[in-house]
Length: 495
Ligand code: NAP
Image 1 (cartoon, rainbow, N blue to C red):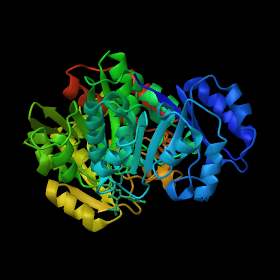
Image 2: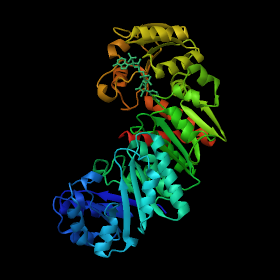
Image 3: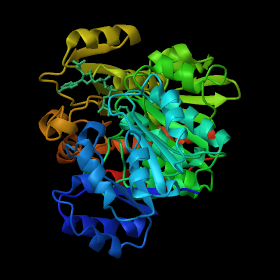
Image 4: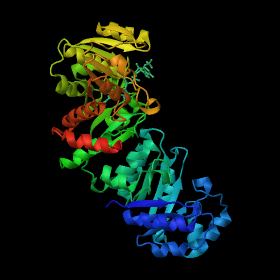
């Protein structure tokens, strides 16, 4: 059973009451973080409004709470605290509080928090907690890298075999898999936030996301696991696309963001079936920046196209082998072919000289188009041009009149440069089609300039969907709905 606990932390009782009532509408359990309150009074008023089981928490700042609390203040709080379903007592205080209040250990969660990392003696921490009669043990540590999830999953395995209830969480973005997969691996509950900006711990996501994006209630030991390997990954819309089509196709699968710093260590310790330290039903991975080239060293087989491009964006875990593919190139070409028909002999301008420009150039040449690379750094344009035996030019003062295709493979038009474009309508006048690989926002400044110049346009989101569709097929053997993928990505991007 998946229990979601929404933790609420507010400065006033009125705000706590309103947040807790809202939390109880979607959560199975509500945690009241009493240490967030300016003054502890009228708590009963809040408790009377709640129909869900409540965890009461009064954590000192030294252990991640919101208040400086000395031993005496903590003790005196618990001596008069309301008897809720659960008291979350830090390990240093638990026995003392139970003795002084005659509380029942069956209502106690005995907890340990480490916001700085994963303690080297984590199993000793577990053993210290397990030596108490508390009904539930809780260990929350901080993950800097995905591999920090390994000891957390291992503790859950151990608690399961020892018949103990354990909540084990790795906080931080890299720890997200423990929050999503934890319940299916025996975690007594998983914590969620009422809203993203109201998270009470690093890496906490909303109940709505846990349920409607990750379908956490349906994840079990048999769930096929896929994910996006990169740094950063939390902004990605890929989980929205893949989880939506897992659901639509009736496949028991989940797709997670996996924040990975050291890709080789991740592949050795968590991915490769011959060396990994945890058992999970990992089936496939998408790979994004900065790991698309480095990942090649960790694979058993690489498709010839991906080898030529020098980048893998898709991994399939096939029995005890890891196979690498590149769906960026085909994903790039598919939407273009729909608009242009054949690409043979077309004059194309690729703007940028990074990874996407490389895959685009390779795919255009394979489809017999002519390519000129335009980049702000002429040396990089020269190097890429030399490698593919194509011409190159400087981006400044470029004119695209006479080009059948103009492709933006720079991040210009997104993030901090959202109002910018690599070319103006004047520069695009006389070009055939403009393809912007930027997909956030969906309608970029460059696409608007292209419309002014009467060019055809292709959106970056079409490539994102096409490459994701090809990945899904490699992992599942099924063809997902492009419309479903496009709509879920567009919704995640706010459209
Ligand atoms: P990358 O390897 O970092 O390369 C970025 C390129 O853009 C470099 O040549 C860089 O030049 C150039 N650049 C950066 N800022 C610039 C600026 N202000 N003016 C001119 N040139 C600039 O990145 P990438 O992986 O190729 O990705 C490029 C873009 O394509 C990103 O926005 C990415 O999201 C998008 N993309 C989309 C899809 C999709 O599915 N739609 C797939 C892949 C990539 P310097 O080397 O001089 O810095």
